[in-house]
Amino acid sequence: MKSSPITLLSTLFFTGLLACQNALATDTNQSVSQMLQQEALASSLAFDIVESLTVEVGPRLAGSEKDLIAVQWAEKKLASLGFDRVYKEAVQVPVWQRGEAKANIVSPYAQPLVITALGGSIGTPEEGISAPIVRFETLDALKQADPSQVTGKIVFIDHITPRFKTGKGYGMTVGGRSRGAIAAAEKGALAIVIRSIGTDHDRMAHTGMMRYQDGVDKIPAAAMSNPDADLITLMLKRDPNVVMHLEMSPKNLGYATSYNVIAEVTGSSKPDEIVLIGAHLDSWDEGTGAIDDGAGVAIVTAAGHYIAQLPTKPARTVRVVLYAAEELGLIGGKSYAKEHQAELAKHYIAAESDFGAGPIYQIDFNVADKAFGAVQAHTSSMQDNGVAPGNNKASGGPDVSMLPGYGVPVASLRQDGSDYFDYHHTPNDTLDKIDPKALAQNAAAYAQFAYLMAQSEIKLRPLTPKAK
Image: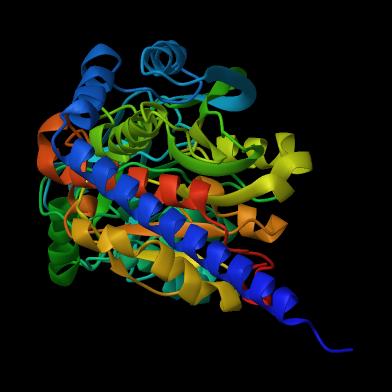
């Protein structure tokens, strides 16, 4: 059956009209994206937020009194910034107190050392532990060692963290921190002290979470400053019989309630679909948690605020999630995924800011292969903010890293982390390490990303098997 000329003309007309509407929508989205960028770059809001958090709350170890003060701060701050809804969800977190940690070389060259307890560690006996040091260059070298080399000694893992813009050196060495105590205890060690997982040369030790394993003895675990690690290595070159004395008094005190704090800009036409941007609210207890992750809190909060102030809200809901207890093992992220499992199918995309405050230079995605080119084109206006298109291998960030396993697409807005691990998990994580202009550029990028994703008509699912 042939179509009549009128039918053909009607089809062409409506096809052309739809194309014009799509073009107009695309132009509008790009224009709003550029407006958001300009507003963020001209504003001090992101820096004001992180200043408020670090000055008015400061260190906020999950499970501590300051953690709950941070939750109250977040609720009040979000409520003041024009979000349509602010609420919190309870999360059970372990309670650990750092106590004191000190160490010194007893012989052959008596000297004090700078150390800090690793998160979750037990303490030493009250009188401390004195024992010879046995050095290993890596965790793998320790695992391959004969137990006779280790029994009755203090293990020293001397793995140097290399510096990279991407921060990938952290992944090369962090296993010694997280799993070193298990490997050392399995071979009869009395304690473990690692070279700090950091790229600095300051005489400050980097803390961070460690793990124990059921059925394996728990031994004290600490990190020493990089200069002290160098010092011990030089001592061992002169004399293989170096004796350390170690005293630590951390305690594990059960569990407490913390909260994921959540704010939303309700979508105008697809309010049940979610674009999630997140950061973690907790920090370690030695610095003020400025770059880890006060900066991330400021970036996503400011981005959400800029979108909330638009005269016309985007189609999808933009959800800002400030996660609890990331430092203690992604506890808030895991809790969120469990509590929201029924609506994860409605999560359009997610991204987390948790790598300091360096400028964002690239955006990666983890979406369906056939959608990758389209989503790069849809976010092309971010290039004016210095954000280049990247690859399709994003993890999304720590607290959202489990979401691709549920089929949720994610993005990674890559920051320059060249100096991030100079300050990470140390007393030196303070406000002065943040460049306000770079922080504003981050807030602009997240505002653009969240808005464009909230307006997108691209089908991002299903993910490829590599993401599951």
